[in-house]
Image (cartoon, rainbow, N blue to C red; front, side):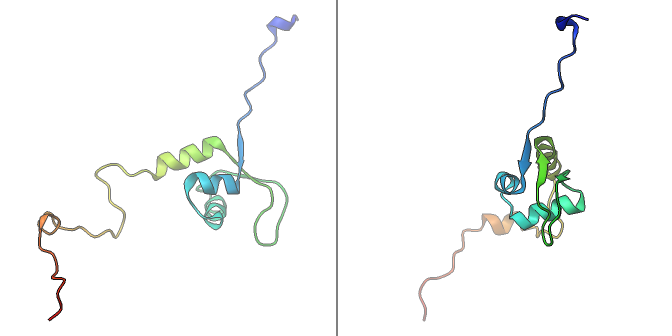
Length: 100
């Protein structure tokens, strides 16, 4: 078989550390470990640690998937969110600054 007939090697996906993911998602390091442990964020662990897994690696595609899943559409609200009536939002009443 000639060199030109060989298949190209598969592309290697970029693997991120927990600190990089925390910075990219604007989360704490603990939150990233929690997401990885719960399975919400696909990850690979290399080695063991008493408190946190050492060598946690998260594929870039897993971060992208998590961002897509976590985005709310325009009609969605967070569970337990308060609905403020439009009349309250449009009111121009402001509290008096003077104290009697």
